[in-house]
Length: 364
Ligand SMILES: O=C(O)CCC(=O)C(=O)O
Image 1 (cartoon, rainbow, N blue to C red):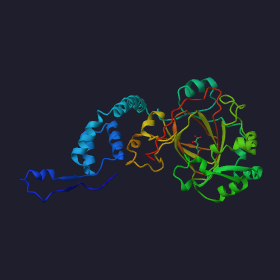
Image 2 (image 1 turned 90 degrees about the horizontal axis):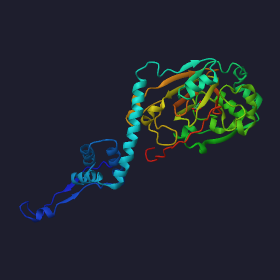
Image 3 (image 1 turned 90 degrees about the vertical axis):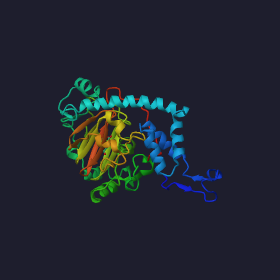
């Protein structure tokens, strides 16, 4: 935005009693650029009073008459009127979401995630999947040999020669999860395991679900060490639905929601999950795809003031813990140790949804 003050060139040639005095006045002010027009429309859509919008414009060097004309004429603008209709429909949805949040705040239990052993398919479907409610499944990994086998040394010994793909150079790009294609790197498992063990805490490299190592490489053999819970998941359907995660202490998966339901299992090391219900979506500055603009580790409340009102459910997953993350629930995940995890989206229930993802690039 422009910061220059208004400049008025007062005429000197004629006295103020001379009728030609006023025709000589040249008022120079900052122009109203398209950037300003977008800001004016954004502010009006957000409910800011015309008076305050005009004040802002004037304080940035735009002449009072130009500011008044621009703001008042917007209400008659057909494009603005059309946009206004959509904004009102959106505001209605937001008020509904706010009511759900107010209701949830009435109970101390609403933001506590249940922990349950031995839950049947029907119980899981009726009380968690259908109700879009998260759950920690406490005994689901009891048959997993992986729990005692998997660690960096095991991966190195058994799969050291396998060429895998990891996400790298994450520290040099704030949007590493959006620019995912630019961060793919091939490496031998033995070299990667060494880097993970010796490199200390870092977010710079991480083998993530999106690297697709289970379906693309010989790491598929790892599936012999686990059981894909037949009560909820379909073990015959693993392509594109079964994911392997391996990285150092300090990896951060930024705040996002998944477009499907998933079960996430922590096998080695611990991870801290910060989880937010979907009825706070309109306070999470979701400008691109499934990602929030907010850095949950270090939120900028000046830039993202609504985020102050958002409650965060924090859960630490220890080895053997599994969490059901319902579609649309927001989460950010940080590893507290060197960590190995798996995740699954191959439910025996329908798990495909129609999403509309935003692509707002001018706010990034
Ligand atoms: O473990 C992680 O780093 C992220 C897991 C996650 O966000 C997911 O599976 O959606």
